[in-house]
Amino acid sequence: MKSFAFSLALAVLAITGAPAQAAPQEAPHIVQEEFLIPKGFTGKYESVDGVKLHFVQGGKGPLVLLVHGFGQTWYEWNELMQQLAERYTVVAVDLPGLGLSQAPQTSYTGVDVSEYLYKLAKRLSPEKPFYLVAHDIGIWNSYPMVARHPEDIVKAAFIEATIPDDTLYSLPAFVATGEAPGWHHSFFAASDQLADAMVKGNERLFLTHFIRHHASNQEALSDELIDSYVRSYSKPKTFHHAFEYYRALPQSIAQNEKLATTKITLPVLAVGGGGNGGFGAQQPENIRRYAVDVEAHVLQGCGHWVTEECAPALNPLISSFLARP
Image (cartoon, rainbow, N blue to C red; front, side):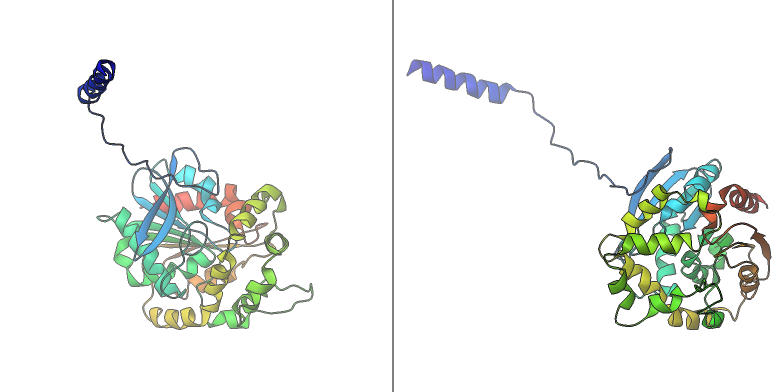
């Protein structure tokens, strides 16, 4: 009995005499990334109007917002990001519903989606205007912010796609080589989620074919790179969200018709790919319908995936354009 009492006393003394332990700290949130993040950059999330947007951020200076295109994610900018980070805060965002970003709670129209991107940029740069660089459907979903908030944007670079307007309705569906570059617009936009059903289970075949047949510089698009995009787009509902941007095109075109009544006056860089799969001179011609100060380039030997096919030619153009007063 004495032994038990003595042991109990020791236990009580050990408990009461032990130094107080700090309350366990909440573990930091770890972003599970799909792609290798460049050195000096960090994957992050911000909730904008109830939608969690994923982006990769690095560098220091004025904000540059990079917006990717269909079939890709923020990663298409990985080489440019590292160059721009020497003098800018660089943010490469995943479009809503793609990559690691949640789907929009609004429509997939350019006006609605651009508001998510605009609010993200203003949260990260509340006091100063920012720079914008967009590719492909990134242009569809960022042009409206330039038209509606020109005072908050210093310059805009639009790469290898047109601002959606009625010229899209005249794209050929069939050509002598068999596969027209713009055939997919109708397929993706078809009702009853036709594209979703046909691509499901064939994601690798579809996206590999799509990327390869819109490219000129095939060597720059390794199998490993394409496989990484296939894995990202093979996640549940990702292709569905991607196709929804195309299904919203008629509404986006109607929105842009109203926005275009006032042309953009801030400097705009327009770059088209001059090779297989590229828009060529049609791209800057389209941009001139919407902006008065346009610097135009067509990169020969480059297809639609200019950011990765022809980074050595494209990235200096963008860097020089952004840096000029």
